[in-house]
Length: 297
Image (cartoon, rainbow, N blue to C red; front, side, top):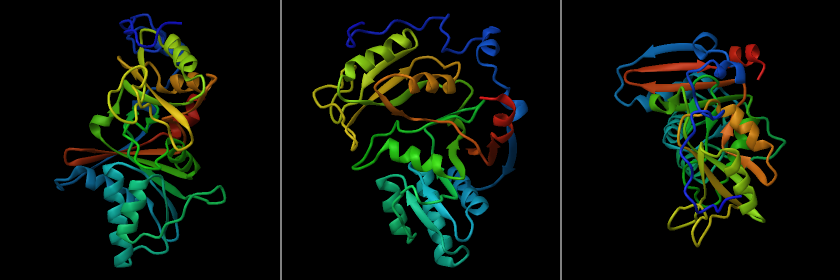
């Protein structure tokens, strides 16, 4: 094992985790091309705030009377929550109950006048919307949890609510929809013997990623500084930072799932899932239902 404070090696062109133009991509992961298998729909608009258009479309198209709705985090979710509150006050939609995934969504929903409940396993959540930090174009796998946690925020709670919903909607900007995903995957690990877990992850992704323990305050670095973050559940968070696009976000998530000491991570991959993608003067609506049925992932 190496000292975690040491600099990481440069990405290797032979790494199985990084994108490549060679034929090994299809042999290793057998992904179906997103352009052939994802359902896509484009609608145009003259509204100047493209993200608001995406949030409005989400509420207008997917939230119905009497639904239980999971409320995600981020600016796009805030816009959707505010618009949902307007519709409830106007009476154009009725009897909606919301389950917040975080402190900010609970606060926005309360201000918007949306009735709230705290999640438990007995709830049937009809739909949940959230803003992904980034999404993989081929699979609609998403990463959440890159943003700084506030108060009692929990990546575990956010994922639990999103995965419990019958239908999941991500509201994102076009720049968050990537053919090759790079950057951080937040990984929750047991705080006891955390360094062993971090070094195992570091060894597995040697040359592909840097592994830093997230700090509560101050300098971010491999060891998390003098004040490493401890979540409400008592875990540390590692930011596994991929320095080049991954071959497959889904495969990386599967590897993380198998590591002793890993409690959860910020990758969400499920069906049905829909992405509402805001770009200049138009929306793309993409779902992965056909992809999931045809690719056997």
